[in-house]
Image 1: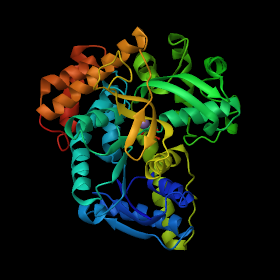
Image 2: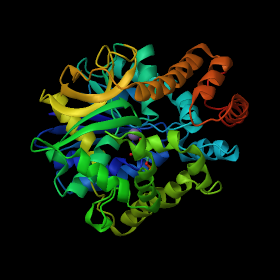
Image 3: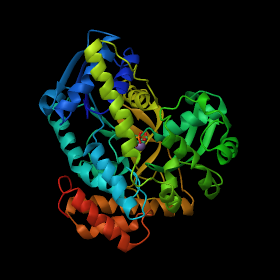
Length: 439
Ligand code: G6P
Ligand code: MN
């Protein structure tokens, strides 16, 4: 049996991930789950729900709720990382400050993502060091922490030998929708994909050896990444803004006639359109705070009062994927998933040290990427620009360089000019005083 720690235990995603773990106890038998968060009060509430979920399955798993790194990580086999530095209050500013300058306001794309990266790199490195100090030598950190692309680059640079696998659920969420459109199971799809995290393309979508990508493209150009009858798909993000995201992919399809773009590319290709259609006073952070956040804490309050667990904590692809990846590591299954890896020739016409997102076999020694080959010039050019923005941002963090931060912002495709880049950066410095290294 294994001991597993969840860093960022106070996340609203925790109960869903725990249910997903419970569904797979046969493949990943657990003796302990440790919840670790720097905000103990918040975490304790979430742990009430997590414990109630565990109790539905077993009484033989020991639960620890702690803010002490040693208690959390001592002798553990796996760590799930899902930290949100600055919580939703800072996500709100990441979204609203750029919007106030007429620029995309998004948690991982554009200036918001860069700001979040500046907050997250050092806490992520601190977490890695705690795990290295206390956990088993064989321990893997399976990392969902955003902005994943920048976090992956920071980890590569600062802790190159750490056992961290950086993952994101957007490719599997997209595959869930593609499967819904084709009327098959997500597990039946075999896809090829290349890019950076939140910045890539599906190049093949096979079902039973037949490439269904052309058919999917036709559908998506008409309906977006939605079935005509959206009630037929089990959407994790059933809320309006995610439906909008999956619809907004339509106008960018024509730029990639052979591929299906990751929906996040809309922020880089349609920034003006996205800004025009954004509510500058009420962003995604507000929706999440008023929705997912409130309903979890309300569920916990009710449970403590009545003993009834209102919400069954639906298991979506988010929870399923992190557990699938972990089982593939634990059992050395070499299952094929899309994850972030260091390029090292996988895509020969991108820098060898780029953190790319591609199919890889997940083994107990880590991800082994499949060779992709050269990519077209247009896609390479887009990736190179985004990569430069992210790499220079990480240099800005490690060197404490204002000039490099400004370069990173200026290079980001969502930002129209150097003057706007400087204005946004200066506002974000002010807002992030408590969190950013001095630039
Ligand atoms: C997807 C992305 C994550 C992102 C999340 C935001 O799952 O892969 O990187 O954090 O969406 O969802 P939310 O509901 O918080 O806007
Ligand atoms: Mn993601």
